[in-house]
Image (cartoon, rainbow, N blue to C red; front, side, top):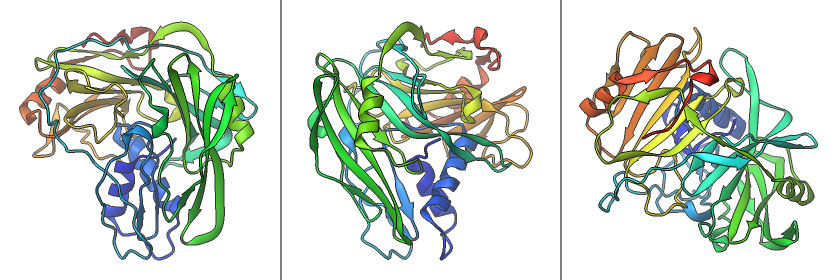
Length: 380
């Protein structure tokens, strides 16, 4: 399981790290937050935080400007860009998206790639797992760790000139080098993770962008915490990417109410064995202007719906487990318990009122998330 910027920042903000906290400690805290909250972000934006230093590299087409403060900085701070919370332009007319993929799951040595977990209008994501690499929740249960993400872009969506990133105190990004994958053009860069408090601890992973088909590119971006991966290993993983029979990513519910002009722009479906939210859907007023836009927790003006198993006693949980729809005043956040499952609703950008989010939550018709045959195609 990878971690996400929002979780990392909140985990540090909640309690300043003690003097001997390591990067791994902070990232682990962020992973636990993500698993317990039921809201996931896109895997292509990678963050690395160490003691009293906020290190947030800017990667690929989603890069932006801005600075996040850190307590008692002991090294130069990198900048992280959050776009405006609310959209700045008028919404586009609703345009339904087919959340369908023909990308198959496969193995390369100790690496398991896929199945595809996220589909948007512009791209599909496949997580990369590594045998023996796990993350652990508060109860000591271990789950497969996402050590990287393959993002496959639709035709004419991705601009390879944006591939790369800017390093910082804990991440060194090497120069671009030319490569080939399956006889097609590719671009590689070595990412070396380190820690300001553990100078001898290093991890080098190759990042790669390659032409997957005519006018269509794919990228592999590593996540912190996985094994070192050579250029040759990553190139082999890329070369094995293949297609199979098409399948739809589905959701375990129907929506009884959705404000006019709103639609799904990203669907994530993950098996329960990975310990994450089993369903995460981002909604937006109309489609996104640019299909290459990264759909994650800082997408301006979104609503995200997450479905996860109800937390067990001892597991951290930020949502109420009381009966009925429970909302946090002023936070654009509601949740509701359905049997053994918790469904969360999180708005961003103040584009929906609390009453609207409450109504969406109250009129959601949950099927049986434990029974994949009851899941349905997204019709909103």
